[in-house]
Length: 473
Image (cartoon, rainbow, N blue to C red):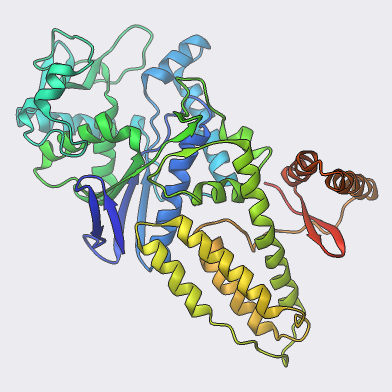
């Protein structure tokens, strides 16, 4: 397996520090609002990487921090005339609700900054002892000039940064690039006690302290959005290695931007869609399929047309999943076993994912598998034994479900529903079919999407359109 390592700027063989164990840290949300689809891309691609490492037999200890003390949180609390805790609790719960809907596996640890003040202040004290930090009237800064390798992750040169940096002028700093480790308390801000006086930590030191506490001084993988390379991750390296004298991270992984008309999706630009808004119209599997079709490191343009295309693309796979379920339920034990080389697809899937988690190639393998298996089954589906269908299921379950998560074998079908409900669904299906016949595909797709969001899944076949009602969490 090879991973593109941001710090070396090349693909490297993946050799964990302590195999089969892998420690992985991912920068999580600042919990002051609902996270948008650009944030979701980082969370989802990190989820795929983690799941594939587990597929390969690694024991992954996965930590994702929750930033629950920050300028944006304080600003929102003051605007709403409430305290920061109320803001962070609301949006932390919203984060958990949304990642569950996206079928993201929960982290082993969700460390919060506010619960790690002892570790944060101890780390700052260690930096102070090594002359890598200095206190100016209750504000503690990291001394960038004392870390000779500053810029090694981003490739930025210290002298160039100093001459051309757009940093806020602060007469208290020895160097304009020095960054805050501890911020002196201001009016209407939460604070904690420290040897430097009341205050709160800087953003960068939080991740270093929490990562060291839960994963150790050197970890295997640190991942996050490419916008975090500088200054956040650069500063994490400086303060972590400045304190311990050891390498902080072996493999750095960074996710490309989700763009709208080639401009980064962000709250500051106002060009964003929250994940929960998008989930009202598209399934988690469709969103994941949309992301998986582009390599995690590359930029990706968002549009509803592309999401629609991703959702339609999954229909063939979902129809095939239903064929598999029906084949297993027939429980035919003495039927025929067609010639079909599943190992060929397993090898191709792993070959793609071993090449820096190449999800576009891996996804193409799944579609090839479905196409070829469908051809193999042909019109013999009632003659084929159930073991063959179970073999097909096992492959799709372990790859498309457990790793890429673009389909599900675990839906709970609701057996009972009111006759009125059924009549309304059938009426909508009839209207959709009429729209499609009139080549009004946009309306037809909209009806399908709205039904899907309510838990009604349609299946188109030569015999017509059938549906099932699934439980929506």
